[in-house]
Image (cartoon, rainbow, N blue to C red; front, side, top):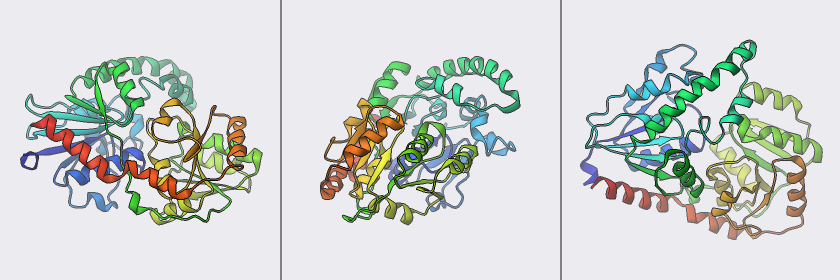
Length: 369
């Protein structure tokens, strides 16, 4: 029986609040007695982790790097390999980076819930290198980084072979796992608690987007677009960094920024938005599904894998390119349309909590029996 087995949950880091952190919450809820291992932990305020046994790596004790964990790139493989997991029967890694590289005993089952093969090694490597800001050491780092990443990419491929079974968060991620890791996987979509959102058929004039303020989330694209069209936009984030401060300064008066909103504020913003606008190229679309659970239509970047979770013209509309021109064209189309907000809310129930729980528990039971 699975309840009699000792379970560990491994994740890359516990710092920000995003889609990966929500999935981690989902897995912890299924295995409340599991111990947790991660590179760095900075969510002491989160009741989810109260009374949990949390083991951090040696990076947690290194000043500066413990708060800027992404700069510890070359240390994270060693950090995860250093964890002693010999007492566990089942290990579940929630990974988009190095946590899948843990080492387990032969009889231990390692299941990886993969959000994506490590972006900065594989699918988005060149984009990350271009976006990185190295300051005064820029020439040195731009010469050195490709050499470091080349070695780490080899480690990442080897680390993927330590996983016994992969679960992918989408068909898109499943294809990437096959391409980069040469491994099969089963798709189990992340869940949202569809009963935990406000619903309103009265929509206000603003468009809404919430995300970490990092380059690939494309908040800069929305600032540029709405500076041009002068429509009302609300941007919410919990990331205070150089990009956030730069974009706030660039934003015209029609753009409102909300820093670190509460869950209740977010739910209200979802429910009353004219539409949720979603510009990045993502591996799965968890946050837009939350908007749909609020009965709010979504305008999104229309990569083909986005279409596995939505119905165009009934729940979403798409724009073809990540440009202001393309987004504004879709906004004009959207404003000529009407939507049944109840249908949108009902469609989101396909991704309800119960669906994920049943599928994931069934998968773990099957593979660990």
